[in-house]
Amino acid sequence: MPNPKRRHSQQRGAKRRTHYKATAETWSIDRTTGESHLRHRGHWVEGKLYYRGNVVVDNNPEIIEEPTEPNQ
Image (cartoon, rainbow, N blue to C red; front, side, top):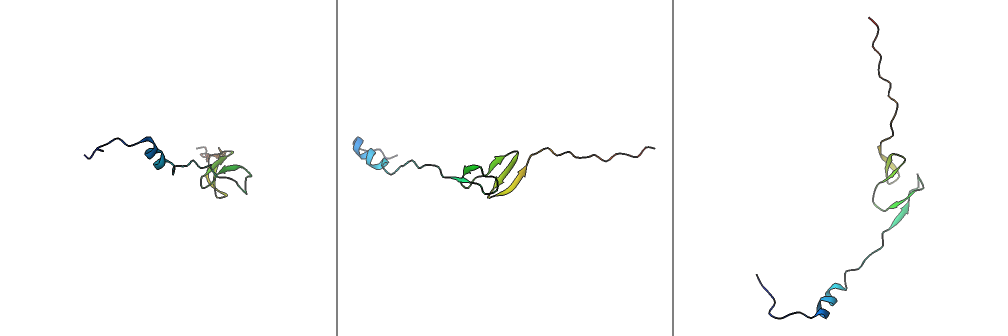
């Protein structure tokens, strides 16, 4: 495995790292719900998962009526 013959200076490493920059996250406001969210990601509002203004997953508990059996 190759190893450097001499020690690199701290300045040399700092020059290489100047290209790594922190970027701020981009936030948007959903047109259907009015909630702010990260771009290109789904977001939960009141038990529903929205992506691009459409409901993808609905976790709201709905009342489901079970069929009753006739008396015999």
